[in-house]
Amino acid sequence: MNTTARRALAAAVLVTGALVLPVALAAQTPAQPVPGTIDAGGLAGPALRMVASLAAVLALVGALAWLAQKLRGSGRLQTGLIRIESGVSLGARDKVVLLRVGQEQVLVGVSPAGMRALHVIRDTAPPPAFDSYLEDKP
Image 1: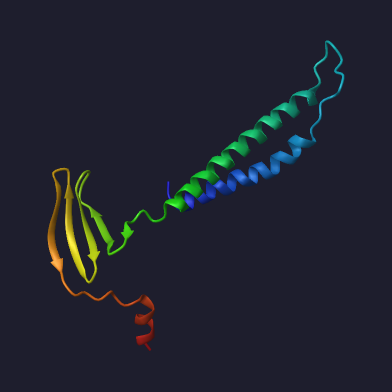
Image 2: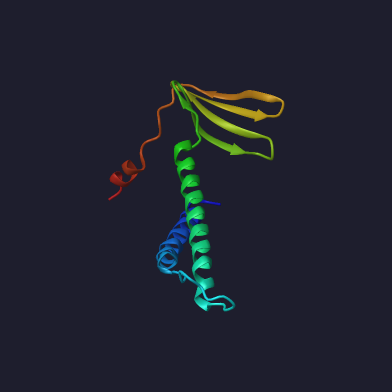
């Protein structure tokens, strides 16, 4: 599930909870029900409270999932001198990763058999920002 779908689901759960919760809290059952009769409004209160509780739990789960994703960050390794610049999956268990180590870029193949340096690019400058392309054009 992508980020947009998660945000839409979380918003739907929050809106549902915001609409149902006040109704569930306002619904009251009689203090002394009459024996032998079934009050039509008597079932609505517990049902609405159950739906409101379910919406609250789903909203909490969605909020915790969103928070966990934000805390995890982009999932890219950025410690000290080594950074993952890019990666491409070649199959179910194989991929190629471009690492930046200081001023060098190293293309590494990763497979179940291990890791192997495929190519080293020395003295690379970081690519210019996208804004610089826009400034050069009239």
